[in-house]
Image (cartoon, rainbow, N blue to C red; front, side, top):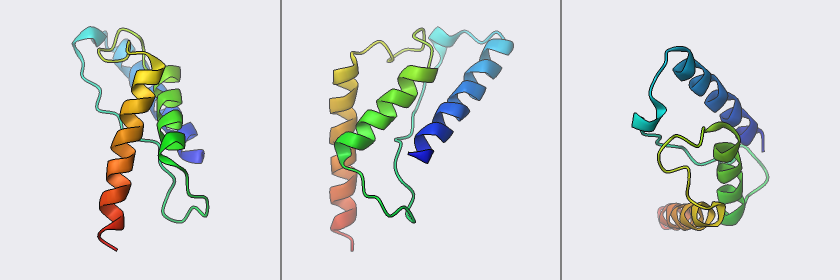
Length: 95
């Protein structure tokens, strides 16, 4: 997904800037966005694929000292997968 690569790049820039300014990462709070395909994307990804891409992006660029990133990869995937399913089910009812 192009979106995954973009998020990885943005996270890299953000954490580089935080490091440059000597920010205490243990005291930060990360509110990540989910890696989802754009509306014009022809491919529709499953909630599990969205969760996998999101976890991949976070694992690659968010330092382990940031709170909440020490959860196991499978725990993050399950949590994100459930959030994505709820989000998609909510949108389907509004069509």
